[in-house]
Amino acid sequence: MNINNALTSTADSETDRAVDAWKRISEKPTSVTMKQDDGTAVAAQTVRIEWDSTSSEAAGPGGQSSIRRGTMFGVRNHPTVTDTNVQRGNRFALNSYQYRVIDVLTTLGEVQARFEAMG
Image 1 (cartoon, rainbow, N blue to C red):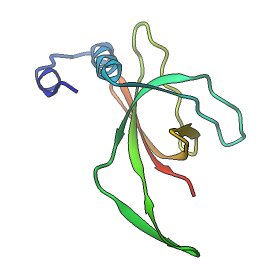
Image 2 (cartoon, rainbow, N blue to C red):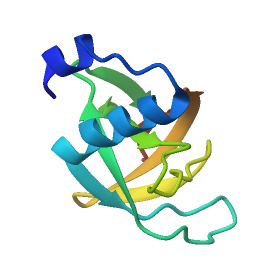
Image 3 (cartoon, rainbow, N blue to C red):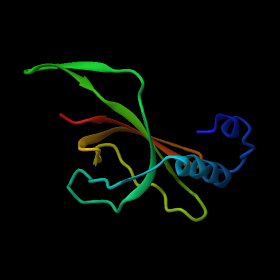
C-alpha cells in the first residue's frame, strides 16, 4: 500500500472513497469465494487481505494452538465494481486454510471484515 496516497487522498464523497478503496485493493488483490451459514456459495470476489502482525494462542483438548487472524477489505457503492458481499459467519478457504468472518464493519465506500482460522 502506498501510504502517501492514502494520507494525501482528497476523497469527499462515498463514491470517491470507494474508488480509493478499489485502488488499494488492486495493489494486492485476492479472489475469495464465501460460503454463507446455510452453505450457499457467494460468487468469487476480489478483496485485499492483510494479516495481523500479532499472534495469540488458544487452549484446546489437544493443547495450545496459535490463532491466525486478518482483515479483508472490500468496496461498497463503487461506480463500476459490485459491492463486496461479506457477512459475519461467512466462511472461505485461502492457502489451504479455512477461515470464518467474525466481524464486519461498513464505512464510507468500504467494507472491512475481520476473520480468523477455523479449527
